[in-house]
Amino acid sequence: QVQLVESGGGLVQAGESLRLSCAASGRISSINNMGWYRQAPGKQRELVATITTVGGDSTNYADSVKGRFTISRDNAKNTVDLQMNSLKPDDTAVYYCRVIASYFVYWGQGTQVTVSS
Image (cartoon, rainbow, N blue to C red; front, side, top):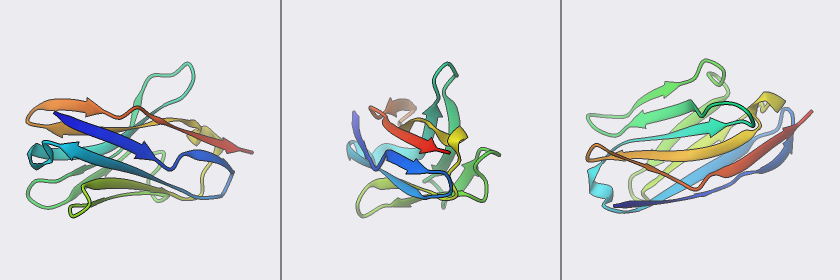
């Protein structure tokens, strides 16, 4: 089992920045992929960014966030962060941390990000 705790959401104005953090605990040695997803009201959950932790870090971003968001991980702290710059109202959503460990998928509880125009 892997437990995830997210932090860092909030209300910001367009153009500002936020940093989300997700701390993993439990069977963290089996984690091979970490990432962030988001779900806006009335929309399906969508990928924001992922980072593969096996064989070197490999990142993947949604086209809508490329150049603005950066995903990173800290092995010593067992965290995965999402630095979000130049935020837009369309980025408003609940952001979820997702971890894949031993072929099981774990989700955090979600953190709200609201961007006002």
